[in-house]
Image (cartoon, rainbow, N blue to C red; front, side):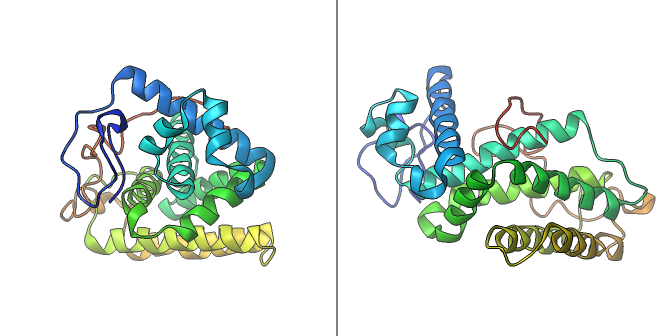
Length: 249
């Protein structure tokens, strides 16, 4: 694992790191500048436009400092996707999707996310490529993207404070389908209409597991720890704030 929670306290890269203190406010501000600069560059030119030196210059940080925060371009773009999903999650909580069933709400939530990505296709392509290229060294960042997506889906379902293993399995399948339809659309292999049909179809798994029904709430163990604090000390279901290219959904 190469991710550094507090990059300014880190030494040379290594496979194992000792725990470090949480980021200071100054470090969090610097990290936000880096992610915003990355999103701007990707919006203009996609994956190839995101060059570490340009990101450093645009965010007004030293190149060495950037590498301490993000060891590679893939780390940087996956972290950017996590940031965009956090912003989208905040927007969805302010204006949650309507729907008579849990499957309807999840489908509408994911399509709103997809529509937000449509508005910045070059950014979407850059982040999707980074996820595809990610190896084990980026597992921490990829896991955070997955956990945020899971939290978004569970919020749309509603009433699942302690989802069962079966319900979480359904969420994972939905998440995988959403990602694959995004790739298919970006590569021109699927239309928006096809994406919508596939998303609606896979979201019916929610009904199979009984999620969203009155007797499903509170059932089963909290297998994934949804709603528990993450490594940075913030809950997965905690409200986040901000705006960005994807957050406008």
